[in-house]
Length: 157
Image 1 (spheres, rainbow, N blue to C red):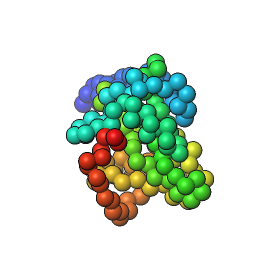
Image 2: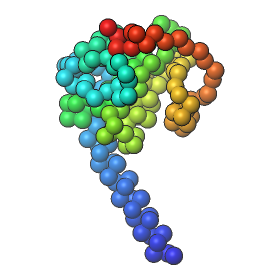
Image 3: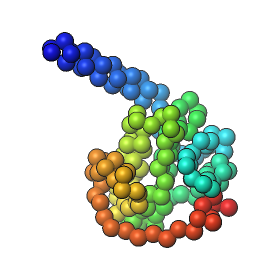
Image 4: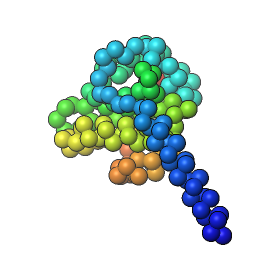
C-alpha cells in the first residue's frame, strides 16, 4: 500500500513539475502593442458565428483592460474588461486555447485582471453554471443576472 501511495505521489509531483515547466514558458501582458490578427487564431471554440481574428483584435483594443497570455509570441489566452473606469467593470470574455487548458492560465488571467481592476467597487461577469466553480475557486460569488443576446451579431460584424 505504501508503494502505491509513493507511486501516486511521484506521478502527482511529476504532473505538477510538468505544469510548472509549461507555465514558465507563458508570459502575461496588459499591452496590445505588436499584437496582430495572425496571433489570435483558434479562439471562440464552439461558437456558431465567431468573430474573425481581425474583429477579435478590435474587441481587445476597444476594451478598458486586457490581459494576454503569450507563448513565444502566440496569444494562447486572454481576458478583457469593459468599464466606466470609476465604479464597475464587466468581464465579457475569458478564453484559453484548447491545447493550453488545465495549466492554470485561465486562473492567472482572472487573477491579473482582478488585481488591475481592484480599485473598482464591482467586477461582474456572466457564465454558464458549469463554469461557476472555476470562478468560485478564485473568490468570486454567485449572483443572479439577466442577459439579452442578438445572435445575428455574434461575429461582431
